[in-house]
Length: 168
Image (cartoon, rainbow, N blue to C red; front, side, top):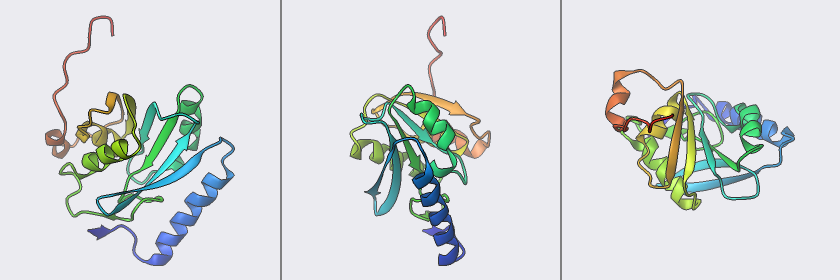
């Protein structure tokens, strides 16, 4: 595993900033940490029911940087934001040397199982969009990809999708 922070002071600074932002957020929410494959994954739940929407932030983003989007989504659906491990935020600050071999997708699939999420719409931004494609979980009902990476390196982690039904 590779550390994303140069030192513990950097990690502490980022974590404190995230915790302060979430503490000051006026939208009612709760936080949870799930351990998946020895990796801590931080979840932010918005709403009292099981999540119907799961947001996966992009590179260098997390729940604390996604407050407006979290509030907007939660106005209509119970929402969960996953701080991707190996990205700045409240999840583990370590990632494998080759995280794009499906590792992120497997982590998210196990988080969905641990939280008993069912038929969720996964909204992924940038890296989060690639992770949404790489996640082969039967608990996902639909995916919304915002600014997915165009790198050919991601092509082999994605799946083939059928054409949308008429009228879409």
